[in-house]
Length: 214
Image (cartoon, rainbow, N blue to C red; front, side, top):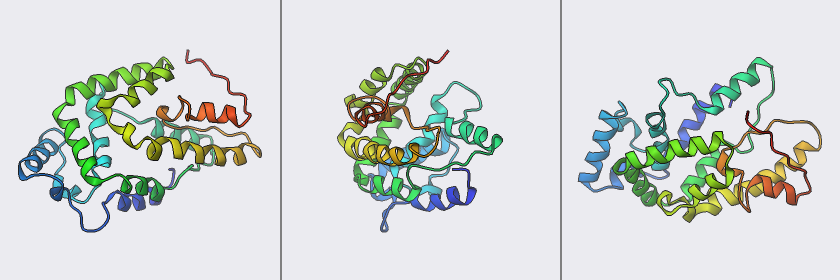
């Protein structure tokens, strides 16, 4: 994540496989609505993103859901801190693998979820703010319950997006942590629940203690 060439190369994997385009996934009326939203609300011409996986495009909505004037992702902040201390940064997955996960989820379903974000933007904005509050208060079980709620829809592909990846990460971490002390950062949705990293690490024999956010 600290190598610009890796991130630039990863942009190629944002695209759908084959000759699929966004306009193929919507009716003309739906596509026009999507086009207008990206132009008017996101100041982004949809023509530049014609072949992007719909699930990736949903990430462009997050800055609009945040109250801060200059949103900055947790990843950016951590990369900045690591650079200051000259720490090596490695990923638990490659960008290619992450992209392949989204290729396993039907593009038509992704397109439907993207449109839901537009049609119910106010609802998702409120839910996003609630999730941020829960994250700051370290209420992992509540975050887990929100992730599993029907309105978010991702529970249908929970194995692909969370469970299988968490199991692979624990295997990798088990070999890494035996040799050196490391700081590991993952999305909050990967932490809680039966197949969350915390429980899987405990099953592996690790002692897991929380550090309270004060």
